[in-house]
Each structure stands twice: as C-alpha cells, then as structure tokens.
Amino acid sequence: MPELPESDAARRKIADHCLNRTIEGFTLGEVSHVELPSEAEREQLVETQFSATRRHGKYIFAGRKGGPWLHVHLGMSGSFRIYDEGEDAPDYARLTVEFEGGRRLAFRDPRKFGAVALVPDVDDFIAGKGLGPDAMTIGDNAFASAIGATRGAIKSALLNQRKLAGVGNLWSDETLYRCGIMPDVRACDLDTGAVGQLHRTMQDIMGVVIEKNADYSQLPRDWLIHNRTDGADCPRCGGTITKKTVGGRTAYHCPDHQEGA
DNA sequence: TGATATGTTTTACT
DNA sequence: CAGTAAAACATATC
Image (cartoon, rainbow, N blue to C red; front, side, top):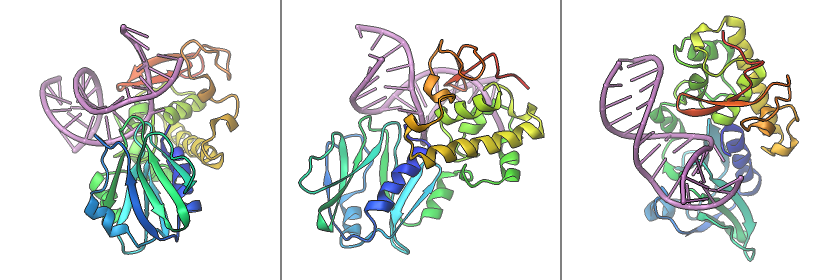
C-alpha cells in the first residue's frame, strides 16, 4: 500500500536491479486510463541508462544527470516487479522497461490510479506539483511551522502533500496512535512538545517501515497496522479500535488512549 | 451484492 | 489564502 516507505522500497528495487543497464525498449500492457509516457518520450530513453534514483514524498524518479527522468507515482495499488526475460510477466503490467541482458522492470497497477511520465527536471517537477518537504528529511522547525500552525485536524495536516510530502492514511493513523493523539484534534491546539513528538514518531515509524523494506509482517506486534479494524482490541491499552471519518478519510484510532489536546 | 480501499485532483462552498 | 466536503477516477477484495 504505497505511501512514503512503500515508495522507497519500490525505488530501491530500481536502484538495486536496474541501474547502469542500457534500455532497449518498452512493452505496453492494457493501458486504457493509465498515464504513461508517449512513444516519443519512451524513444528518448532508448539506448540510455538509469544511473540514479530519487524519491520525494510518494514520488519516485529514475534517470541520469542532465537527462530526462522517468517519474512514477504508485497511486492506490501500483508496484514494481523485477524479472528476467523468459520468466512470466506479472499480472496488470502497464509498462515494462526492457534492459540489456534480459532484465525487466514492470510497473504493475491493477486499479489504474498510478502514473508514469517523463519529466525534464526533477526539482522543477516537485516545485510544480507544490509538494512540501519530504517527510523523512524535514527538520523539527520546518515541521512545526508546516503542521503546527494548521487550523484543521492534525490528521488532515499530516496528509496534506503541500505541507508535508509522503504521509498517507495508514502511517498518519499509526503516528497518531503511537503519540496518543486523536486524529481530529486541531493541529494548532497541540503544544510544542506534542508537535515535536509527532515529528519524531512519524520519522521513527516510517524509518522502521523502510528498514523492513515495507514488509508489514516484520513490524512490531503492538503497531496499529496489525489491528487496523473496527472493533479490534487495542494492543497498547486494552481499548477497542474504532473508526471515524476525519477530513474525508477513514481514521482508525483507539479512543481510550488517544486524546484531544 | 454492496461496502470499502492505501491516493490525487477538481470543483464548489464557507 | 485556509479549510471543508464531495465527487470522480478503475478495479479488486472482503
């Protein structure tokens, strides 16, 4: 489920398996309603190599210095699959990059909410999207000014990609759960200490998910992720996990140990 | 069968 | 400008 940590794990697949190999071509799957690079854009990449990857928030990039970069957003259900020529292509492959030596990189996207595009400059792209600072590298002061001053719900602030890039529904719930803060508390009602704790906790949680390569089965048992179901027992306090809608998103939380400001 | 889903964008208000 | 709310996007799964 792609948020920042899942996007980073996906980026790493490219970094680990697809760099410095000449791109020979592309294969398209069933592509209606999926944003993909045009034939002319794909042609610009043929005979070139990816030499580096980047990630900002949930946006992944692969390219080389000076050249156009391939940008990928995984949307709701996107993923990458690395395989070699002769192996079965995965289901729902929308765009497959063919490298020399038979290496394949498939962009899978069952629900077609993802996007792949060619961008001339990564920084310009990020600026053009209006994305806020990356959630894993933002500093304490920048976090406090981006989030702490918001008048709306803290959960909505964390999810706002213009304020902070990378946090999605799952990890915003996990962060608030660990901090003991109700998702619908107004961000500006949190004291300085709580905002600082939120910053540290958010980075700690997503850092662990990145470290575990986004394999949820390796995450600690007392995390909300394993019990994110209406009516489940809260593994931290014995309360009951409950859902409510905050800012149009479903917010799972424990009313017993998550409190208002 | 119907409800729900990890995300983004757009539009229309307040 | 800041924020809220709803709808739309396409499809798989519970």
